[in-house]
Image (cartoon, rainbow, N blue to C red; front, top):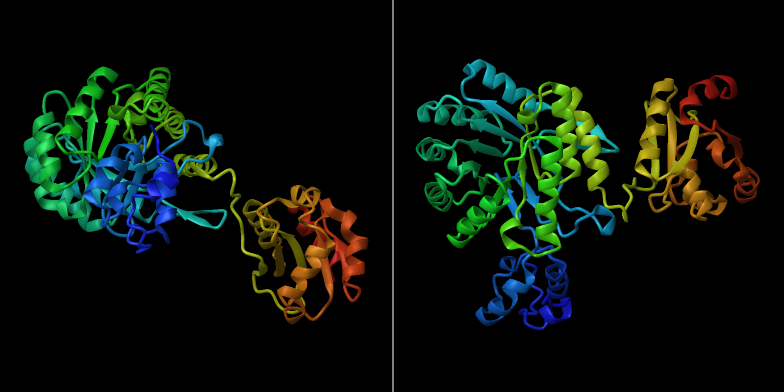
Amino acid sequence: MALTGIQIYKVLPKTNCKKCGLPTCLAFAMKLAQGQAELSLCPDVSDEARVSLEAASRPPMRLVTIGAGAKKLEVGGETMMFRHEKTFFHPAALVVRIRDTAPDTTIVEAVQEATSYSVERVGMTFGIDGIAIQNDSGDGARFATVAQIIKDKTDLPLILMSTDPAAMNTALDRVHDAKPAIYGANRNNIDQMIDLAKKHGVAMGIRGNGLDELAELSEKAAGAGVESLMLDPGARGLGDSLRVLTQMRRLAIKKGFRPMGFPTITFPGEGAASLDEQAILAAHYIAKYGSIIVLDTFSPAMIYPLITLRLNIYTDPQKPIQMAAGIYPIGNATADSPFCVTTNFSLTYFTIAGELEASGVPSWLMVCDTEGLSVLTAWSAGKFDAEKIAKTVMDQDAPSKINHRKMILPGRVAILKGELENELPDWKILVGPAEAMDIGGWFRKNWT
């Protein structure tokens, strides 16, 4: 039976030492109760308490770490079946597969291209999360050489992929300090792969022929002390992978079935006949329920929409992505530049900022704290009114930025003009366009 946070707290050391990364033992107990932390993070818990808490506090899906350093990858650790129940915590990782049969120059170019890929979305920067190295050559020495080449060219986490334990051991001897994951354990090699995972302290991916075999193999690995696992049920098509991944998630989260309580690894390229099909499968895995998605093709045209989809699904629905309140220059804004105002919903800010930049007119954009709500939503909720705007003008010392006293109000809330003129009697309030895309034309007609 699950314990409450208070019940867990009673047997913790209560030293508030912060070694677990949380500010207090009570906060740690609450995380344990919610399945969002592991008891092993507390180094001072007594043996007696450890025995009583271990089973009750383990997350339904284990958190698995791949790699080392700032770019280490964390997957799993989920506690919800559906995002709307609360939130998802660790976004599906996008990994690019490179085969050891390619020439060295091609491998280096592919690694550099994937490593340097970077896109910005609502103020956040995203890129590729890892590199998978496939042992297609069947040659352990070549596999190890390619692993070394790639390790030397990137700081992204690595996944070594081979079903040959000897080849895997050779590669691990070369790059084990990067803490790569290994993938390719199956019914035929599970014992040797468990030994390698234990020897090098790395995560291990298991492929099963159906859920029964996968559960048997994961239980065997966990029983042998390898609990950082990634599960591949072997399904590759849209329908069968949706069915089996949903079953696995339900078994782990709803039924507490430990053999399925690990992140998954998926391969959209293996079920696709074209780049379009690979993109569709990858999107499907992001939505339901891939933890690691190994892409066979590095294509920015495919990866950018996948990143956008992932951001939408893995954003906490209770915490909209927000900008800090402030006054932001767009271009080389001067004291004579237009002064616009909006809310702190990130998508709203970046949409307007992009249109202001595209207009070619250097401007100021003042952001009011509306708790992450967009313009109309914030206005209807009473969080974006004349009083809030006037207070932000004063708090952010807007008069120090500009010589004029003109403010451009979003056209959708033109109704605030009169009230704002009362709040800021020294200012001239202008009503801007209803749509951000029209700001350039509006400047040409109204700003002199």
